[in-house]
Image (cartoon, rainbow, N blue to C red):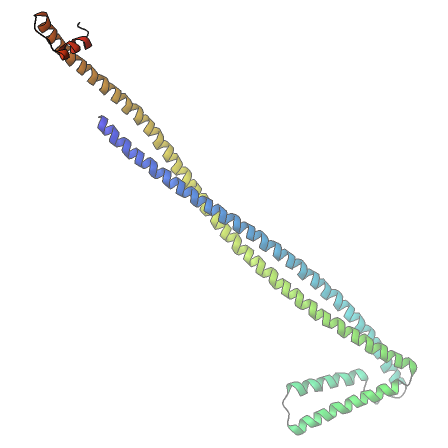
Length: 286
């Protein structure tokens, strides 16, 4: 029975070590998953912060786009009013047969665009260039004629300056719009990275929880094995003590029996050896 108990104890001890090793391994894995989760959560926060910064910059540049557009439109509106006044003056003073300055300028721009984008024969292209040149001369002559009037001259100067300022503001609109788009793209990219990082963090947290739960279960099994080992130790220790006591009692009886036989010989006058005397003394017969 004692040997069976010892063998069973060995198996439980082996199981206990297995559960302890698995628990430690799972705890180590849980810690690793927790570190990965924390790192990914930190990255997610950084990506969101960067996305928010770029969102604010995008909104700031979009506001600049709108305010600059408003300013550009104001300059253009003011310039248009002056050009309308110039055209009205021209018609009033007998220049109605000539085309308006604005219309001529529009036609020149159209012809120049055609020259840049369409394919012409050499003769046709020369003809087009000459036409553009003549139209520009006409504008120049008309402006020279109009500029003889001091008031109109001032209006032309002011109108051109307003057009220049409008063009300058338009260039800024383009610049701000491009910057707004750039920061919008950055914002979208950082939000995408934040989503990916958050998903990875969620997966690491899931793995952490699973590893931690498994480790807790292995720990419970380890504790249960430890309790069984203590129970077995108590039983085995009791059996060993009992076996030892029984063995001692048997030995004592055998010694007593042998001593009694020697004592009989002693009483009958037989000569005893030193060992015989020591045995009698140990048995308290003399």
